[in-house]
Amino acid sequence: MTVCEASAIMDAVSDKEKAEWEKTRWLGFITAASQGAKLDKPQDLIRFSWEEQDVVKVTDNRTYEEKIKSFERIVKLIQSETTVFNPFDTTEVNKPELNTQQEKI
Image 1 (cartoon, helix red, strand yellow):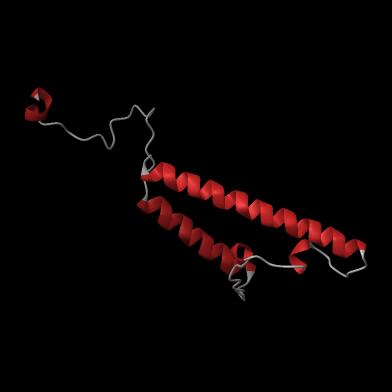
Image 2: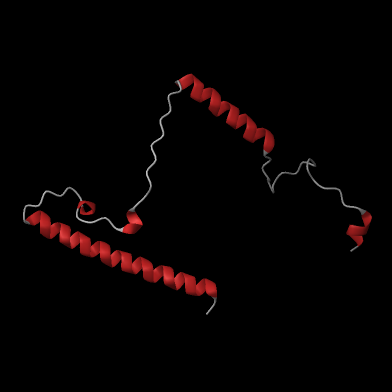
């Protein structure tokens, strides 16, 4: 067994364990809700560590026009710095020159 295969197996076992815990939480939620508990969702009963995420709120006070200008600058920058490889392009642009020694090898 390779390291990659072992990692895949460990991930599958972890996913199965998470699914079992979530199923247990769901059953607990249904039981508690049927007894009159005021829960809106199963996560209100218990929150698992793999569900915890750092939430960062970002406020953007720019106007719509400022956002558009910023977006246009980013698009121009990306277009000027990147070239997309198209294997079906038959133009001679961007094709490297081969020297005669490389051709003979």
